[in-house]
Image (spheres, rainbow over the protein chains, first blue to last red):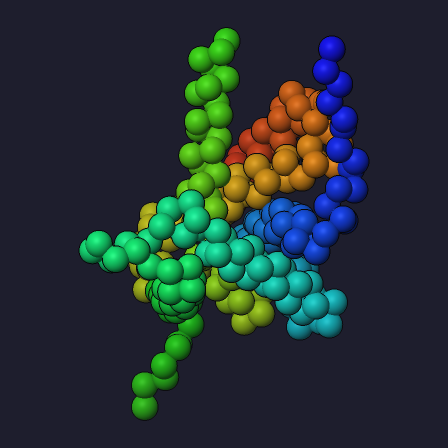
Length: 129
Length: 110
């Protein structure tokens, strides 16, 4: 009978690379937290309450928002680094290198962000004079 | 039984991938606008077409939630819960279903 040794629950603490992978996985907790927080804010606004919105400018809430943003960006960038390995990006017959693919994806992130901010939320990106 | 499991896994991984793309490209901007710029209500040109605005919010929130829940499940396996795979999967799917129902309720009445 072959015995397979169970890996320790702390395997991810052994190397810096493993910690980076685990942080990426953990960033999902922050993504889910944002989804729930945003839904709660919308639900509260809808029922006329402003409990969470009135906290927006407080230091803990700004701190939480920045933490959520940092983990979300970490999740995005690590996804962009992973993408060329899963599905190499091609322009015609030329396969983009990992770095170029990362730059292209980051460009996509900037364009998508500007579009979302202006089209969905009405943020004035360029103020017309 | 096996084919049901295969179908579930195909659906799960498919929505996870789409949710990953949605989360990667759209979530950072949403966090900046809704929390840091304090504009949680969609109020741009897209809001003139409420159906599109609601569809955007639904796809964003449910896609990101599905993607995140999928990864959290694997984090739990990594923490040593791989012996309870079925239980963890069932619990995470119930939690996800509750989030989807909550999202539907909130977004539809916006």
